[in-house]
Length: 350
Image (tube, rainbow, N blue to C red):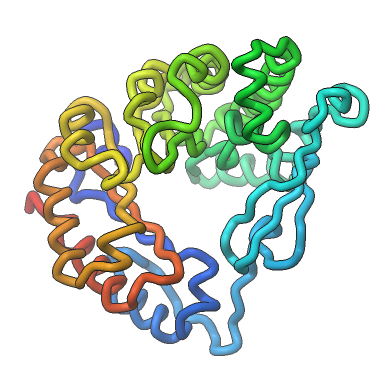
């Protein structure tokens, strides 16, 4: 039987609106662990199968989110963060000078890395094989920031925009190499036979407007998106794309590239705009506000926000999922109010 999430994104009348609540790794250093565990135990619909860890449990932060420990990834980009658990920023750009391209720096091997961490290909293939034998499935995804942000990390954001404006020929060569690298990763996941959706997460928006013009997106980024999404499209696998920020000016181009499920932020893009543009046409995985209401509002305002979004975006046929990422600074009473609201309104059509 098709799972509820798949029915939601395909407009096949899901049993309920899929809701996801993620607690960022940094939260475990900023709140009493027992308080977070209490909330998780109280909200079994959001945290099914949760088992409270032992009292000496400590979070394990990923390498690019470790304070005072710079991390050099397999692409040669150097990450820094000032808060444990918060993904850092690349400050070391291996292609800041084009003279390194093809000499000091070369594209890594997709059989050895996913672009952010080293991978065990043999182990990965065994995992796929075991999953096939046992009838398991997984949701495939490229690393966050696979194309535009990867180019920014390699060259530096300002350099990249100048490259685009100047029509630097080496940029086209770099993009082609990066696309082939990413394509190898996509094909491996899809060829596994167990992949039920493919994700292409990449932040393209700022607080107001995108980080590059629609014209630059169409010229330099969209062609790679189309190539990367084609294997999933050909296999009939839903195509999911996440972006933070204001991406209204890029929405049509993203859908044109093949995106079928779009994860975007609610208040930055505007609930009414999202409803007008996508309701009943393209599945929205709504990224719930982290900047205003859930951080600075009251529990009642948190509940009202979720109710408004459900009223304006939900349909019995589906087409809406909702997701929230909790970060330090959110009052625990607001986190509880949000969990309560998500569990209450997920059954809106019952």
